Length: 426
Image (cartoon, rainbow, N blue to C red; front, side, top):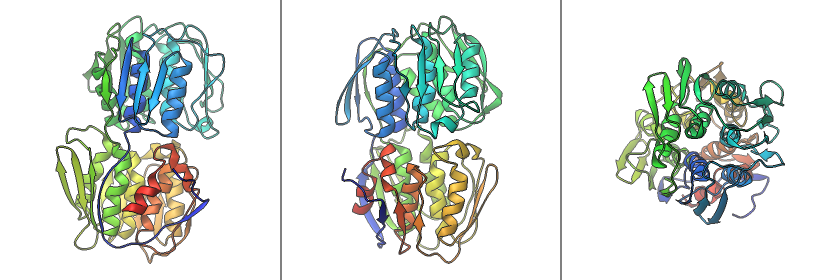
């Protein structure tokens, strides 16, 4: 990837006609790294994502005793068989929420203390609900940060297991973290969701899918309780990481904004990735969507885009792309039930409100919602808040609005280092 300038003007263009592949799924790569690192034997991950977030997870599992050899998108992982190391230095999760949360749970299996830390923004992202749950399961975890945030120190010594309650109203990553470590607990783990609430539920389904592929026995006991069988540990295997639906949201949205056709190859019709739900939303707005066994395609609308009122709790990462598409709709779009956007890489609801207004829209937010009322649009310099999805989403506005400039475009390296090369090639 060529170095990007601090300010990147986006070139407007006409209707698109493009076929492309997006990088491997970050969510799947990081889950597969954890399961392969805990398994006994050598696994091969095909299609893994090269990015800052997966670098952080890779460094973390290596520090805990796994061995990883990376050749482009084909990674070989020699696992620990659940016998982890206790590194003397803190694990640096950088800005990766999955890394910080998953490794906090996994570190309970280490023989000694492990500290997990991260970037300044990570020290503002809560982890206390996960810590409380791990303590109920027998782990000794100390919060070293302020306001229930990292860094954390995990004493290690193993996970007793048993029953525990977990507040999953702010992040599904807390649930996934416990599930990933649970096969190595001394007793079965039963996880009760507080008030039956689980945000971004499809990401937990994705975790269960990866765990099952590596041989674990985990699933739903009822609508609000998960169960993991202790001793059914992970087995090394070859595993293919599917393309990232969260990344695919941006080329799909590009077709809605600029018109024309964009096809993303490698997207299985059986994929459980949550952000593929954006396709249905774009169809409601007037786009034509086609699905095949290994592709998804979006054709821009024949007329004006229609506004929508939509609950995006299951696919919060797609909200940013949809918010930019809504700039070009004929009427007010309302996006609901997305309170967890306020504890992401930045407060995404506040950031969206500010930057949408810069382009001429009337944008308003509440505790868990965003409204976009299109107005006369004009160019602007977009601040990205060191948030990869802000950069990727607002670049789409420049496909139609002259004068859009993205500041700090290099932040896309968190999940898609070549994003702007893809955008330029559309």
